[in-house]
Amino acid sequence: MAMLHIVNKSVFERGTLDSCLKTSLSGSSILFIEDAVVSAVNNTSVSDKIKSELSSKNFYVLTPDLNARGFTDADLIEGIKGVDYDGFVDLVTDNSNVQSWL
Amino acid sequence: MKFTILINEGPYQHQASDSAYQFAKAAIAKGHEIFRVFFYNDAVNNATRLAIPPQDDRNITVQWAELAEQNKIDMVVCIAAAQRRGMLDDDEKDRQGKDASNIHPAFRISGLGQLVEGGIQSDRLITFGD
Amino acid sequence: MDGEGQTKKFMFVNRKVPYGTVYALESLEVVLISAAFDQDVSLAFVDDGVYQLKDGQSTDGIGMKNFSPTYKALGDYDINKLYVEKESLEERGLSVDDLMELTYEDEDDDWAEKSSIILVSRDELAEVMDQQDVVISS
Image 1: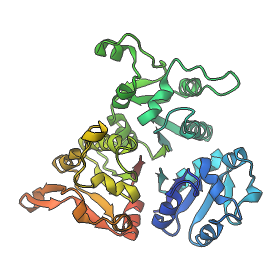
Image 2 (image 1 turned 120 degrees about the horizontal axis):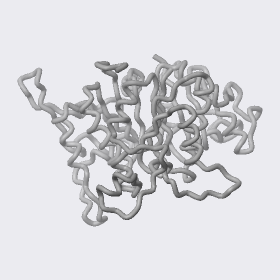
Image 3 (image 1 turned 45 degrees about the horizontal axis):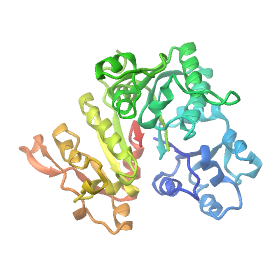
Image 4 (image 1 turned 60 degrees about the vertical axis):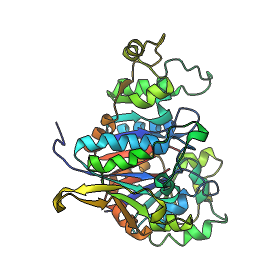
């Protein structure tokens, strides 16, 4: 089974991304929505930590949330994919189960 | 696929309700079914009939009501959470001896069992919260 | 009805300290209702969620209802899988001895009283989570 993990808070504000990274299995997918999208922008103090997970997990960002906060997909850590709400729906259906980290 | 959506936060205070709404719209556009939207914790406040948001911004309650009407979505407000926060329909108003009700007719008040049932009957249950 | 008779694995994930927010209490209310549906229900206490099971909660001074005794009733409702993450306890200077004693009577073992708390490592919890059909976060 592959789980979709959804994180919605900035890594600089809340520990949910850390907990998610520590508890998600290899092969799982992690989607940043709402404020969490800033965690996926390149050249922050957490970029290296996220990059180290890219080989074992699939990372996505909800692009509309990124745009709302003044960024585009071009600003993302390389290897993180932007999706729209359609893509969000697909991630939910393509993975076996889904967990929101709140 | 059939989805149940759980929302745990009130409108405007958190983006949860907006994210849930956009997700629901996209899912419907892709041909999926929204089995139920369940409003818990402060999310019961999404169901107020009385909100007057600024004209140039979205009206979250009305958005949900229109989506529900167009797509026959079951929108359930948890009775326990609603009672705590003073969200009442006419039945509750009469039963509890209050002088007003405030729920928009697109929403119905029911028990937490509706959330569990949603989890059982749906293919996926997604939570939008804090 | 579609899905009638179906048993799914439901996990309720708790990550927050109690009383500062309502999530611990209102999550517990869903758990109690879920007992009526004959599903495979478990709870996970991770990060600050471990504080929800802390022994000795006394709320008179803050004027809020102490709902911690409700966790003790879970065993009577056949909800007896409370996963507590080891690392979360350790990070907070806690051990299982600091938590409430939560038990159930095992009908398959002559009603022997057993602990409902299942201490797991982060990695073990990850595996259990991955197996769930429905994860309800609060």
